[in-house]
Image (cartoon, rainbow, N blue to C red; front, side, top):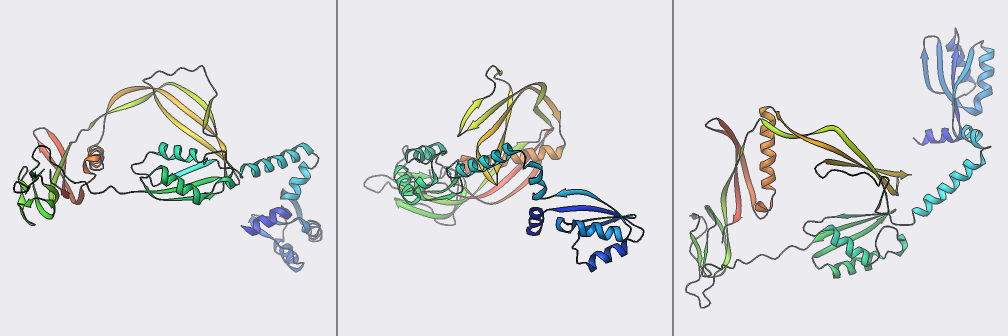
Amino acid sequence: MILKIIRWIFGYETFFVKSKDLVNFINVLNRNKIILWDILKIEETLYFKSDINQHFHILKIAKNTRSEIGICAKKGLPFVWKRYKKRFGIVIGILFFLIFINILSLFVWNIKINGLKNLEKTKINGALKEINIKPGVLRKSIDASLAKQLIMEKIPEISWISINIDGSIVDISIKEKENAPEIIDQKIFPNQIRASRNGQIEKLEVYQGKPIVKVGDSVTKGQILIDASEFSNNKSEGKVWAKTIHQIREKINILKNVDVETDNFKNIYKLCFLNKNINLKFWEKIPENWGSNRNIKKFKIFNKELPFKLIKEHYFEKKQTQIKVSKEEAIEQCKRNIYHIINSEEFKEIKIIDKNEKIIKQKNEEFLEMTLKCFENIAE
C-alpha cells in the first residue's frame, strides 16, 4: 500500500509493446536496471508499468530492439498537477476546502452515548447541554474529568461514566446503578407471604416472619410460604426463590397479513445540519395512514464525519393483503413471537435455566409450545 502511494506521488506510466521477440526486449530492460511491475502478456502484446523517469530509456530500448511501443495511461501527482496548474481557481478552492475541513475538526459534531438500560437518552443529552457539551462546541473547551463529576451529580442513577474525545466525536459510556432488592410488602395479607405459582423451593430469604416451607419442598400457587402471625407488628417480609415451569403457546398460522407498498409514493428530502432538519420541500402533505422509511446519507472527508447529513424520507401508500407462507416460515414467526414475550418486562426478573419446544395439535389447528425451566422469586 505504501509503495503504491509513493509511486502515485512520483508518477508512473502504463506501456504496451508489440514485438516478435518480447523476451529479448525484457532482458534489455533488466540489463539497464529498469524496474517494471504489473507485467501482463496477451498474445504478442506486453503490458507493464514503470516510473516516469524511465520514460526515455524505455523508448530508446524499444527503438533499438525494433519493438512497437505506446502508452496506455499516465497516472500520478505530476500528471494531475500538469492538468490543473493553469486552473488557479481550482487550486485555491482545494486549499480553502482543506482549511475548512481542518477548522471543522476543532469542533465537536457528534455525541455517542453507550450503556443505557433504564435511563432515557434525552435525559443524558439534557444534562450534557447544561454543562455545554453539545454539537458545535470547541473540543478544547471540554474538561472530561469535571464533566463526569457534574453529570453524576445531576443524574444520581449513574454509578460510573467515561468521556472520551476521538476527533470530532465525543464517546460517552455509562453504567447505571443497580436497584436495591425490593422488599415484598403484602397489602392484602401483611402477615403472610404466599406462592405466586407452582414450584420447588431453592432458596429462602426471610426478613421478617416464620418460614413455613424449607428448601427442596414443592409448593402450589397460593400456598403460605412465610407467616408473621406470631410477631408483634404482624407483618411478613422476604423472598422465596424456586424452580418453576412456564409454558408459552403460539398458533402456527400459514396465512400472514402483510402491508404491501403500492405505486403511490412521495419522497421528501431534508438537510440535517447540527441536528437541525431543514426541509427542502415545504408543500408536500402526507396522509396519516401511509407507511414510511428513512435513509440517512453521511458525508466524510479523510475518514472524518462532516456536520451535515442528507435525509431521504420515503412515504408510500400501504395496502394490506394476506399471503400464504410455508410451515417452516410460520414456525419461525411463532418462535420470534415467543422470544419477544421472553424478552419482555414479564420475564425481566426471571432466570431461564433451560427451554425446549414441541408442536402440538388441537382439533384442526397446530401450536408451537415452548416449555421454560426457570429460577424466580415466587413470593407475593
